[in-house]
Image (cartoon, rainbow, N blue to C red; front, side):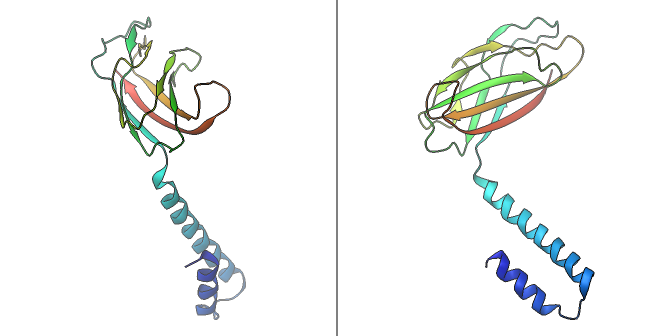
Length: 156
């Protein structure tokens, strides 16, 4: 049933509700329906998750060069040929931890060793780290972006 049809049926059932109240009820119902439709449309969005794996614990503020974590991929867009992974420390976003390119051939998992980056290594307590995976049509930093997915975790 289309949203406009539902609203029309809704308005017909509540003819005894008048003016401002009818408008408020219609607005609330419309908002709820739009959020339901939006969440079902996003059910097939590109998603990633990751596990730090066996990286050496680092809390000195001087990161190690390490293999990428284990990435799990879901709903990778069909046109994807490459995925660029980049890590950001949400507590110190100016620090460049790097990332790397992985050729996408339909795999749902990226194992350590696909690329190297600077490990998480917060000097004072725990930090939140976020990986962004950018699905691309070609291996290029400009253009060709299809979709992005993000996942974050605290470390250590």
